[in-house]
Image 1 (spheres, rainbow, N blue to C red):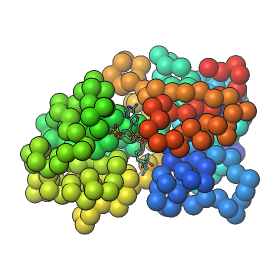
Image 2 (cartoon, protein in one colour; image 1 turned 90 degrees about the vertical axis):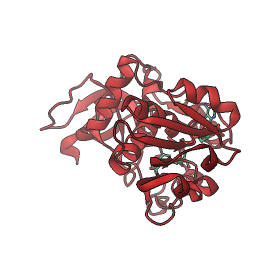
Image 3 (tube, protein in one colour; image 1 turned 120 degrees about the horizontal axis):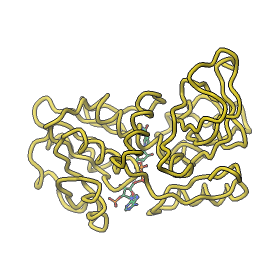
Image 4 (spheres, rainbow, N blue to C red; image 1 turned 45 degrees about the vertical axis):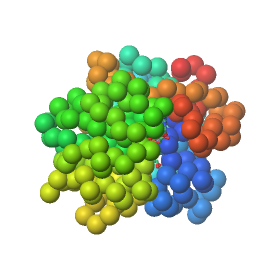
Length: 284
Ligand SMILES: NC(=O)c1ccc[n+]([C@@H]2O[C@H](COP(=O)([O-])OP(=O)(O)OC[C@H]3O[C@@H](n4cnc5c(N)ncnc54)[C@H](OP(=O)(O)O)[C@@H]3O)[C@@H](O)[C@H]2O)c1
C-alpha cells in the first residue's frame, strides 16, 4: 500500500531461482508464475539500499536508513533505481557488510532459517542433515544450525568439503557416496538438492523425524515450502552477520546495463558467486 511504502535506492540481487523466465521454472518447480499478464515486469526480489522517502503514517523507518529486504513474489521486483516497498518488510542491513553482500543474503538466509526452524522445528542437541551444504541456502543452513546447537551433517561434492567444514559442519558426506550408510538416525533432513538425495532421505530419519525440502516435493510426510519475507528473522540475520556469526556468500556485482549477462551468469551450472545488480552508482 502506498501509505506504508518507502522509496529506496537499492542494489537488488538476482536472487536464486527468483527472476527471469528460466529461474521461475527452475527455482520453484513452476509454483511461482511468470507474470505473463503484466509484462514488462521488473525482476528481482532482494534488495539492499537507502530509504529515500517514507509514506504518511510509516513508523520505524526513516529517510536515510540503510535497509535490506526480501519483497513479495506477487508484485513487481526491485531491479530499478527506485522501488516502493512496504515498510514492514524492511530491516536494518548488516553494516559490517557491503550493500552487494547484504543484497545477496535475504533469500538464502531466510530460506535456511524457515526450513530449519519454522518447518523443521530443529532444536539444540538435535542432529540435522543438510543436503547441498556448499550452496547458497545450504551454507546459511549449516551456519544457523551450528549456532543453534545442533549436530550438523552436510552432504556436498568432494570439492566443496572444506568450505562446508569451514561454515561449521561437524561432518561432511561426499554426495557421490550413499549418505545413508555414513549417517546414523537424525531428527531433521533439510534438502536443497532434490532428486535421489531427497528420495533416499527417509532412510536416515529417526521415528518422528522431519523432512523439509526447498528443491521439490519430498516423499510422503515431508514438507516443501516457498520462502516468505519476515522482518524479525531478517533483523536477527543482520545482527548475526554484524557479529561475524553469519558469513555472506561470495558475490559478483554487475551494473544494471549488464543485467542480461548477470542473469545468464546466475544460470551457469557450477557458478561460485551470487550475481548482484548494482542499480545505483552511489551505493556500493
Ligand atoms: N523453495 C524456496 O523458497 C527456495 C528458496 C531458495 C532456493 N530454492 C532452491 O533451492 C535449491 C538450492 O539453491 P541454492 O541457492 O542453495 O543453490 P546454489 O547456491 O546454486 O547451490 C547448489 C549447489 O551448487 C554447488 N555450489 C554452489 N556454490 C558453491 C560454492 N561457492 N562452492 C562450492 N560449491 C558450490 C553446491 O553443490 P556441491 O555439493 O556439488 O558442491 C551446491 O549444493 C535450488 O533449486 C533453488 O531454486 C528454493
